[in-house]
Image (tube, rainbow, N blue to C red; front, side, top):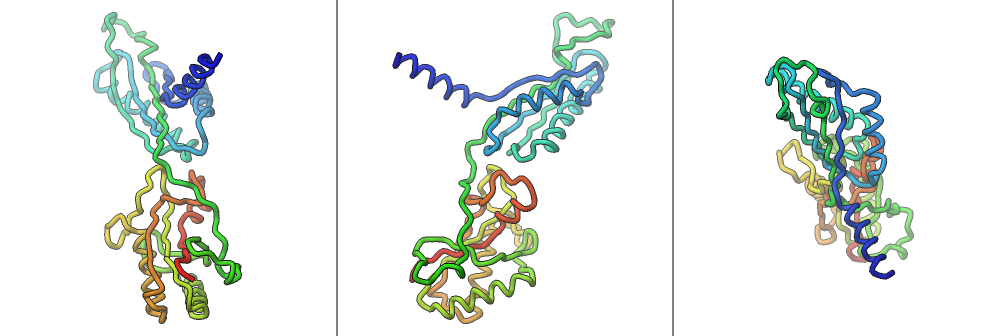
Length: 277
């Protein structure tokens, strides 16, 4: 019985690790998705883990009917139809999509006078694999102003108001200056507190790297924004000895996968960690 249980558990683990692969079929010369096609895609994707993201490989094929150039274009159109459908209906599941136009599939029974073709060759093959390199979702932090000073803890991160930058830049929105001035007043009042400025970016999939700073062309946006606030606090008279900064890129989102503007806005944030009291 114990051996059977081990085999059963191993088989479950193996199934979970395997790729999902299936085909959908098209009419001769067609590339638009039928209702039958979309139902099959929905059914296959319904079993996927909605908290994960996946890599999709979309391979388009045709039979031998028509010219090779026509069939290569047709296979590309079929792959594009599927990828467009996925991007419209399952964007939160997608880490990457790779499209391949394969053109005609060879057949030993090929007859140039035959116009029926081979139904099984008029298809798109969809291969789906789970991307294991995903960020760690964290919980929303307490606002540091709402926590009594004697309740603050070294090593813990806190929110301190919404800091907004222009998209892809380190240029601060005017509405955020009041939030920074509030932080200045807090640090002036509580002179023993040392903090780390923490920058986080949005708009990531399973790629946990930093975002692009469009002003510098470097992939260091979370670091650059944290550094901006660090320098701002120093310019307002806060001792540099009390401050440090670090960019966390997309390693610690509040929402993942991101399913809309609100999730992206939540993830695009700056926090502070108490390093000394």
